[in-house]
Image (tube, rainbow, N blue to C red; front, side, top):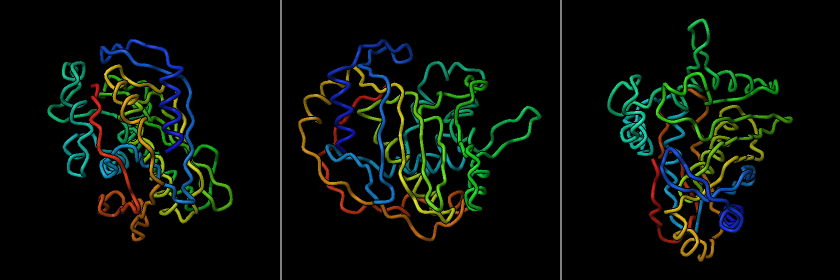
Length: 283
């Protein structure tokens, strides 16, 4: 929580105004931010200075792990986060590759589970990583990437959190996640939850101990219509202690994550927070 607040204050104190072409808004921006999460100690990085809708963040990531490409499938899991980008983004609505209502195209999990090889076959990046880690293998290339520049025009949005690298030291598993762009007031807590939960889940299904998760952000920003709420409301509040995350121990394989797991298999223990803040969302 203190890492999050420190980053918010840094953006306000040191940030530079940048015009964002996609949204038509200005962003107060800093370059390079590093956050660390102690998954071994189960210090779940939920924002406590406002209410965090953590179930939606986990639901969204489950959709990525399943390779979903349709906003309706995300809604069934409990995440509405792709509704706007799939159905309200003018550039995507006019894109001839869009298949219709709720179509997201080849974004995020599609690349992670069905990366297209030159010969037309699909590469399942996540399956390779899980298989290696279960056998105790770290080839220093246990990387899940959602970033495919050759197919940007085939999706509604370039990935923000674009790469996840797993590292194995003995029987302890580490994760380093890279993010090119981060809406700090609205999106960052989703990303924090997902990085933490991804490492916890991968350690559980591969039979390893979870270590630290390292979250690296290139461009961290606050939109101009979010600044007042962040500066004058959220940063005036005192944080509560970090809660814990409980994951159903019956989740043991990648196939479990692909089939029956829902947000009901996750519980947050000891979460205290201030009331919600409705930050504007930029499509």
